[in-house]
Image 1 (cartoon, rainbow, N blue to C red):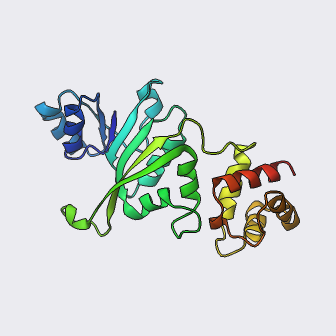
Image 2: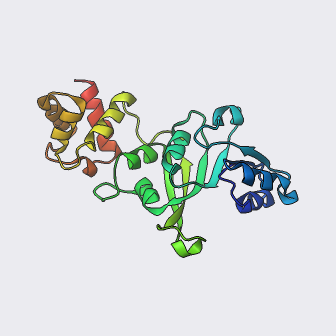
Image 3: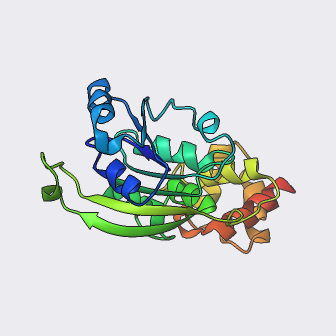
Length: 230
């Protein structure tokens, strides 16, 4: 088990009590010194490191592993995406983060929170929102609500496009100009002839007048395959 943001050591202690083999990383050297001095955390490996720079692959040595942590909200998304996209990444991540970011992870098509981040997470992970915490649950209280969410790695990606590179270009392009129709947004973002985009949409049984937020993962995969074959 890898814990990100050991902080006060409360989660570390709870994981140890459950019998987990814990490596806890914390960036603050003064907190690391305190954590290392505590007898109740003696079985944990306390590492001073930046979660954005830690060498997760070397640490895991190809073994199966899981992540838990109270993530710093300013780096939560890049840390999680690095772990989700990593080859031989963690089987699951149980983390607390800003509620509006967690909502984007679980968002469904045609909802305000749905976007390329939703697709990137749901492509690889099953999203399980667990509980919401009000600002008053913390001291000092933050200005936002927090949410604990579990991300469980799927046995295989949710969709299998012919060309993953094209798939991700289409996903990013579809949300690049959210107020434009899908045909116009993709034409601008991909630098492609609009007629080519419209043909691919027709082959995918999708209207050129749709906007990107209406498409689910399967729609994006079909559209990417149609464009890859053009």
